[in-house]
Length: 408
Image (cartoon, rainbow, N blue to C red):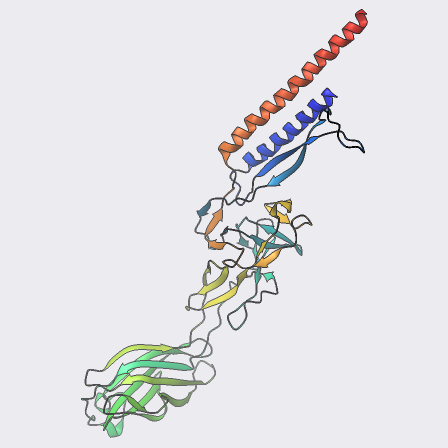
């Protein structure tokens, strides 16, 4: 009996040493969660239970429990590195099976999909056209390296002041862009056609007196439609057109793009007794763009950024949590799978109840405390030695008994 008890102690101590060795080996493994050896004592029992004078039968390892305490978060500067500060796991698709990890070292494969080093796909909620995300569906995060499509200019706006003290130019009746005596002021802005080609839109303003200004549009030096009229009150506010919109008609680009038709919003223009001044202008078109980078906010929203200033929502990182994380099954590569013991995953997004925040350009380090593990190793070594000594002692006792029996 004593041999078996000591042997169970040796076995348990050896398992504990293996767990500690594995912890120390992974002290620098990103996203690794250390384990703790949990022991249970053993007793022989009958249908009547354990006798009051019963001696234990030794010890066994009841569980090797992962410890999901927070690891230190270190900045890396890499766009696709992510760390979770708080609760939750990244969700992965590994050959169609869902797995979960705290290891945020991601990269792209040949198809632009964001994957782990082992090839598992990071799962996100797909972006919808209205700016929200479909939290009922998981999909692979794909970072397209293609060109961002252009958008033709359809609306433009000016914030400007036309000087009230201006007089009608001498050649106002014969407007000519090359004749500065046929208009008072001019301003230009860049607009884009449906192919993303840039064009220069120039607007000319001619004071006709009585708070009335004729406005003419030229694109790339070509007149677009007829002159339009702006009218201002004696307080300098725009009165006509009442909606502030000027539309000069269509312009056909020479690039082969679709006809351009731009609404110019002049509602923010005034006629005050100061100089001509354009303080702001904007338009909604843009040219083609190349991918310049990926940004991920604290809620896990992933955006692609392009050289044309356009940002595109690619998805929102899907996080999972569990009622009993220690019940998760370890799958290697810092990945886990759900079990009956862990419960089914509760899905959500970062920053909401039960989930931590995502930090981009950062990684969560191993939560193994080297000093604590070294102390554990010494303790487990002493336990191993003590049980070894118990076996030697039992051997000596057995030998003495045998010698006594032989002498009798």
